[in-house]
Every structure is written in structure tokens, then in C-alpha cells.
Image 1 (cartoon, rainbow, N blue to C red):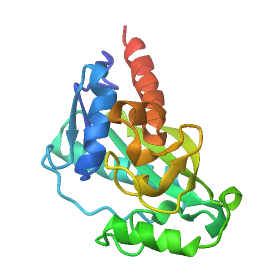
Image 2: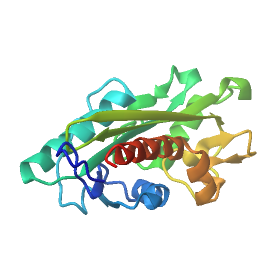
Image 3: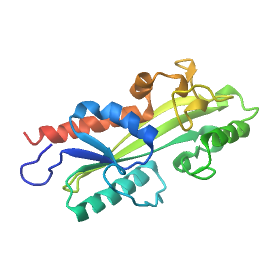
Image 4: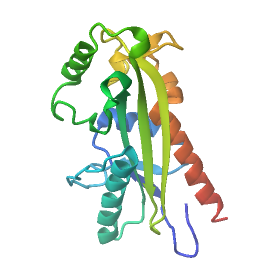
Length: 215
């Protein structure tokens, strides 16, 4: 991806995450772009980023902008992507929402977090257990251009953990349309229908349009 007027020149993507499970999903979904995709660690970036935004869009852009600024000081030309995603449970006023990763503490096992959420919904009927996964992908180009994409997948909170294919809150997120939990889906199917998969597919379209503008 090379904009000849100097505004954009990049042959790789750096994704602002240290989550290995998430990175595997991202690399699978973005594989056909023809650009190398590195995590922060693979790019040699070790920095704490304060996610103090109040929306998924704000937090995703905070992360992407921080990495882009660091790359600028290193004179590295790369597209920076970052995501902010989370679980919104309607009965809990859309909690944990933007605090999904930090809910009950970042180092708390998700098995504990999931058990806590199930307990909070004890006795709540199916029709009031509605929830969604939301994902926002933010992009910062070397020329400073910024873009965001957003996607969601609707479901409801189950009564127990099920499945081994997911991570995070996947084992308690039931998809009525498929009759199974998110963590029970095959990885390829999950990537096709998930909030992150759909947001990344939309971001791929943004990146491809940007590439076409250079022709």
C-alpha cells in the first residue's frame, strides 16, 4: 500500500493488542490483505495505554493514536489498527460495556467474571437476558488519516459456560439463531459472524479503498 504523493506509504499493519487469542483471530481474518500483520510485541512496542474513553470508538482510537505516535518517533511507516470491544447486557444497563476487559480486574480469570455475570442474572427469564458483543476497529494511517468501523452481534446470556473454541465472555454468550454458544462455534464460522470479524471485514474494505486510490 503506497501513496506516491507521500501521504501514505506502508507495507505492514501493527495491531495494538497483546492478546494472543485475539491476534490469532485477526491474522486469520486479515490474511488476504497481502500486508504483514504484527502485534505490539512483535513490533517491539511495550507501552501502557490508558483506555480512559467513555465509548468503544474513543478507546479504540486512543490505542491506535498512541501506537501511531510511537511509530512516528521511530520513523516507522505502518498502518496502526486497534480495537475496543465488549459485552453489553441490557438487564445490567449495558454493563460491563467499555469496561469488559477490566471488569472485576484485568487479571481476574474470565471463568470468575462469567460466573459473576450469570449469578447477577439468576432468575432472569430468557427474554430479559438480551446482550450483544460490540467491536470498534480504529485505524491511523501514516499520513494521519483516521477511520473507525463498528459491528455487533446480538444474543443473550446463557445459564452456564459452554464451548472450548472461544475466549473471554464467549462461553456464556448464547446465539439463538445458531442454537449454540459463541465458544461452541468453529473458528471459521465465528470469524464470519462475530462482532470482531464483521468490524474487521469492514476495515478491510476501508484499507482496500485506500489502496485503490493510489493507483
